[in-house]
Amino acid sequence: MSRLFGGLRRLSFILALLASACGGGSDSGSPSASTNITVVAPEVETVDALPPSLVPLAAQSTNEPMAATTPLITSSQLFSWVPVGYPQLFNGNYTEGVYSGISYRFFPSTGNFVGTLDGYVYAYGPATRNTIYRVGTLQGFNCAVMPEWCLPAGGQRSPSSITFNKSELVLVASRNTQESTTVKATITNIPNDLTNAIITISGKGFSNFATIYLGKNFDGEYSATFNSDYSLELGTYTGTMKLILCRNDPCTEVATLIGGELPYRVTIVPRVELTIAGNASQTTGTTYIRSGETVTITSNRPVTWRIGSSITGSTMTTTTSTPYTWTGVLKGSPQGFIGVFANPTDTLLGGTQALFGFK
Image 1 (spheres, rainbow, N blue to C red):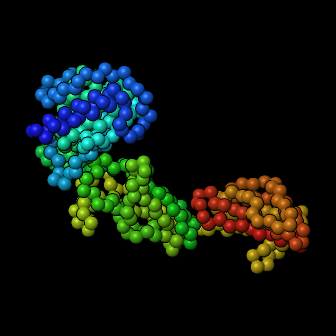
Image 2: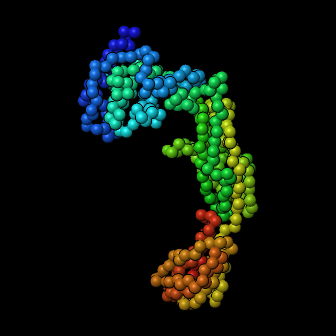
């Protein structure tokens, strides 16, 4: 007990000093240069008679059941939570620091401090009538700050839930090419003992291994990328992806999961093939025409057309263009070449070009 009140005397002195000088910590926001706090010799209140403004905050410090492996929240996690839960008391830019074992964060816009010492949480400022109040233990705020760490009444963990960013994963790929697609997922009630999030695939369609690890993004979502199997024949392949949340490395223990399955459909289509009509002759993949001739090119798949490689000032003038045909005039010198490129509209890969030389 003497250690506790010795620490509180230090806390009283430090908070009084900070309130009067608004300094002593590392800047994590853009705090004001000074504040208008009236400093009264702080006294420590540890009784239950809290000011009305602190009652809701103190009520968040509970003894809800937690898993045996639940970690203890840090002071930083608590400090980041209070402006979200109680913006009327703590908001705006702040100054924070650690001094002699005391961690604190000060919010100049409200003049209030929140601090931790020896596992207890304290508040100080206008909201407390400039008296230090102990509002609970750091462990008691675990479930408020990190609800996914806690167990509901009865000690049974709520099942995890997943929401995919699409109802079906659809991919179209050209034969003998490898297309990629990404699926994203939002997972709630993530087990604190989660070791891996993996996806298993039933059926053909993708070249990845049967198990794919789901990575966590900076935005908190999870994502995985899948590649089409370039060895598949033409046709449509369907199956189901299943998400598994592993609670140990061998994944012999898994978390209960709601909505962990996603159907998929992979369609393998022919590569783009071009047919050239006109007064042309072909030699080793190059079609030779007279400069200024009109040429019509037909595609077996919908494509977009553009000029490809060209040499020595060759030009292409489009007369008509549809997703399946291109008609235009090609001009160039006998040493020139020009390519008309056809890029499929339903896949990223599998395009080709018709290369022309001039007689």
